[in-house]
Image (cartoon, rainbow, N blue to C red):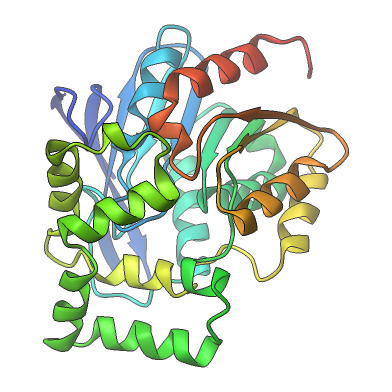
Length: 305
């Protein structure tokens, strides 16, 4: 089921297009998924990265550049942005089914997918499962392990942390401690943005507002603890990617944390994958959207495939 609202103005949470609502049926329940369209032409689906401040708005710069030539659509994952944020056991099966159902419901022609961060694993799985749905795929700073998993925290402890954040009372306190303005600025300066001068008080305040919506702690808790990692091993992702006969581009962010950078380089080294290295870290798609957008347009206009 789809409904539409009037055109939005550009804020940190959207891409300046026409805001719509998709009603997703999952295990006997209905959930509201916010998405937005801009421009006209061949459809391009933009998938934002997972994080505590994830919204389709982080893809706004790329959307603005592509919308002059393509019909661009960006959506908020369930549990993030302006989509519904229910108290659920967020897991890979849920998100994989959401993506598949959404694409099949919204599009009636094959699409191009551009995915950032953790979204890359879900996009690649979709393209390998239903290859006639996707004509080209672009992975921006691809990752597949949640923060605590990257740090080497054992699964039992990660599960315990998730349960604590989900719990009433104590969970909300723990979540608030990890979404203060100071903590968000620290994380942005350490892993997400390269240029700290962009982390203005207004920018951080807007990002923090995203984290303060009702039900905002559940999906991010699953992300941080590895509960929504799209694959169990890198080989799962690379096998899916290698199975695709479509044009493939991986954009590597040169200043990414060492562990994440090593994963990006390994994925980009696969046969048949075009790669481009650009300045940026995990938030490259937002911070350096002009460079990323230019690279994407060049790839999409090239004669491969």
